[in-house]
Image (cartoon, rainbow, N blue to C red; front, top):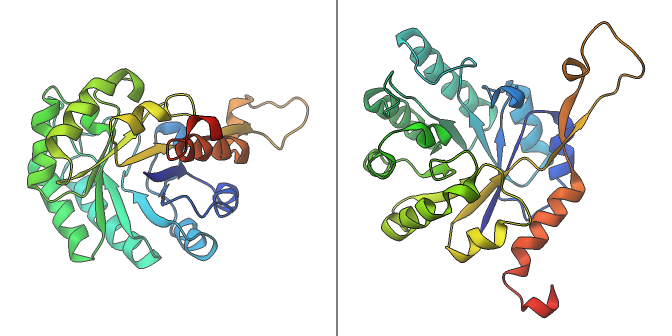
Length: 247
């Protein structure tokens, strides 16, 4: 089972660099906004520090996932920049105003990424669509490498049945990566249905500011990958390859 950790800062890169078991990093900025396109240096730093492959979010702004022509062009430029910064893949998700996959824009961005030999992940935008299984087929037809999905639910464990259906129908055609509330307690269930990968942040909130401030506590804090949580999640995955008594 592949392991992908999402992060948005240098400190978290230093933590994940301690774990060669981690397959991929989803590198973003502003994870508190569900992730935006990262700064090039963060990608370069991850390349220097970690053996994990580097997949970067391509999302030009916060809010909905319906982008106009200028924003699509901006995303294309971001794909080029991330390639030049050392990314191995990109993470995209473009919908129309009815929450269906914007096929034309997705094909354009996917083909562009492939021209740079970048892998393509379609992120949890797929969990917003009204036609979940049909949308997975669209991703397959467009040559997308993987989907990050919670099975159309707020949390992946809640969407376990639909993720299992996708695994049964599309295993071998596209990588299925479960994400959204994945932790040590439910990882065995994802292993049981045979998902190809799990995705989590394993983060804890941190602030370097002491005492009172005119700013809110939330605005002066950030999430950092928690080494202990990473260890627990990796152990939960490893346990599935051993007898219960050895866990």
